[in-house]
Image (tube, rainbow, N blue to C red):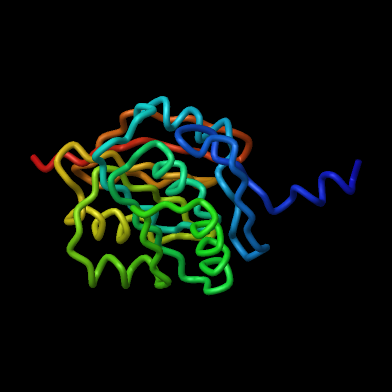
Length: 187
């Protein structure tokens, strides 16, 4: 039995949409822990199963499963940001197998991407390594990239107190992971 568990250790599957059931592989890397199937299922129930026409940003892509799940659910564009070159190479290999034309992978860090990019997004996934501490700076930096009514997903072992303007829509917990779905209201 241990052999089977080892075989599937660095795999995660897409749980919905056009590529439902497809498996993604990813390397072992510090801080890389894909979002559990049950958490993704809850999130996409909150967002709606069909993301047709939406622009999506996965700012700490890791395995890529969050953004690729959105692509499978017909998001118009998906931008994956991953700073670890080895992890980004694994995402690129998965992209080639899945043949998603609407997905762009950029190998850079989150802060550089936000500072140098002018795109706006309908859905943003923020799932940095648990050691991440710069939440307020990150939330401030993401605001200019949000479409009106955008949804922002946060996941960590401890979540920040929200700065002014952010509104909690939904929240949950699974094991040591806490997660929230937010929107930004500029009053």
